[in-house]
Amino acid sequence: MLSLYAAVLILSVLLLLLGQALLAAPLLAVQILYKLIAPFIVRDWRNPVILSNLAIAAVHCVTLAGLWSGLRL
Image (cartoon, rainbow, N blue to C red; front, side, top):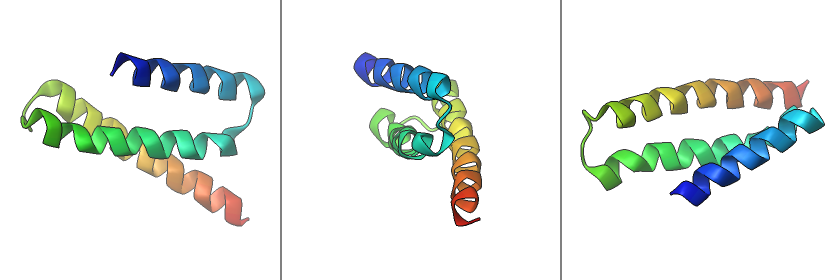
């Protein structure tokens, strides 16, 4: 799991430095996927980490929707 977080951190920093917001879409999609899978792996829907991951996934979904609408313009 640490390697996943390290990869997300490295890619996020690179995309931030490059200023390529649209390239962040696949990264956000991966983050949403693993944050939504986590409750099924942990099997504890009341865990504060799981709840915060679900909230972050919701924020990422809104961000991804904004990026998607930016693509259509």
